[in-house]
Image (cartoon, rainbow, N blue to C red):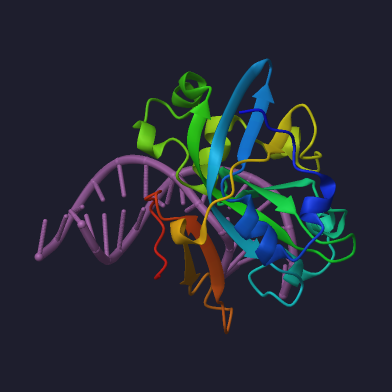
Length: 199
DNA sequence: TAAAGGATTTTCT
DNA sequence: GAAAATCCTTTAC
């Protein structure tokens, strides 16, 4: 299947819609000549300053600057002292929002993914936001603020995923400090991952 | 199979 | 100084 990077305009829409339509697209990362890719099967929308679970709830800081930038760029952040997570920035500059890529189905470069993931089972290569970054070699120093249409990190158009293959889940309780932390997680029902949401 | 706790560092209060 | 958009191992049932 020939596919092209999604156009910048794809990301310049409501975050929830972008999260839904990223399902089925291909995330592709090339590091030092090694290309790895996977089909996006789980995403999560972070909708702006009013979304208390979104990093932008803290306002405009050095860390969140990318979120305030134009759509179609990668926001890669470090969490829990050891994991990277990758987002696609959405809407327009000045409206800080993004879609977290939560899980992939490995497509190309599986051998490299196995090496980076230290021989874990294939089903555990990319079934989590931190895991997929490790498998594909995505890190903040390399990829934060990079255009998702660049050579190193791209998101390619894929076959649309029908509603019948998608589950929307609400996740509760990211933090005790958040009063009403409702999150929408959209995932392909064909993919069984470790998520804890309720359908 | 589920629940609990540790790892480890950046970020903001 | 505490919490964090997580992952992994250990322990319990």
